[in-house]
Length: 513
Image (cartoon, rainbow, N blue to C red; front, top):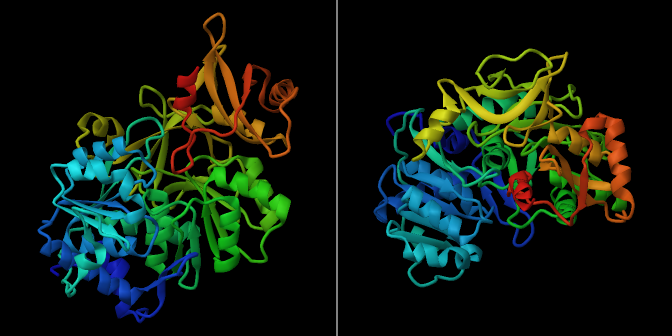
């Protein structure tokens, strides 16, 4: 190894040198509850690197990872970095058509896939002109694939390749809350940058922590929570490869007793409703965080009443790799996104690019060391998003008198009523503060005169009745946030369309009107 700019040196091999070889780095919830120690991870990731070379996968080639949250995930990810191959973790819940598009876009030469997911991707993977190796993780070995055990057979550990901190280390495809996913390229130094800023100075993760993240490893928020943050501190992460339901999450909390819990707003809302019914587990959580979408203040207050601990609501993006704007321990104001994480700079700008005054709504721009190297094969979108050191987030915010940032909505979601900007999130917060409402999404719809007005889609609490409730909710919103902001239409639905990160896909609701 010619230098230590390769992130695998800091996150993996360092722990062996510092005496943590036998400490569990990852533990699976349920099933066989397999564990992976830091020492075993160092050995297995080095063997993955050797196997990649033996398979003819060259440096800087892309290796797609359609891998569930299981202990093979970190071994493959860090093994790729050790070999100089670029891992590309993929959302495990996409349709085959999206996987085909990503295969064609990335021109990946290798695919790692959990056997449970093989039926979804089989046809498009076998038809890909780019793939030269398909490795299936599990007991079976489907035709035209190689089993993960055989892939690693007789492979000794390979010495880590040297890398510059500015070398591209891995890609993530954006979650697609407003359309098709884009390949986001991240450099080696970005991983540690998120740990030195949010992980250390806000989350405050420590070596004796056990962390459980419902957000999966395949996207930025989950990768930080469930892999890079605990690995930076020598802590232990709990992995669960299934869908996080309130009942299942409660079982994991009870059995694994994590000290840090990382959720998303939709799950927190469902958990509050569940725990108000069955009671909370007899465990203590030291820290709880949320991202993916702004957390309604009412949900944060109810969670604190149940657990006695605040949810640190924060804002991040795939482009910035993790949270750069957040509430902090001992400094939480529900309904706000807090202030800039140390190490990041923020601006709010108008449509002409000028800074807006306090109390005015502007688009949020962020600057920090974890910023992406750009989009793959998307030059126009890269130029529109990455402006020198600054990254456009597409989020609309305003600042309060104390300097805290208050979320107003996505740029594409904002609209005007009677010439005044309306924040869908503000109306949604008012709706979910009503005891009958579990979730809500607000979009613009046109009335009989062609003017835009708010329309609400509402998911009710378990025992709530819709009869006569629309008018009650309309009057409630008028009282809470203003007469012109109330939803002219209220439609009750069973659920809301969301990305895998829990973001509400309002563009789908607009398309239905």
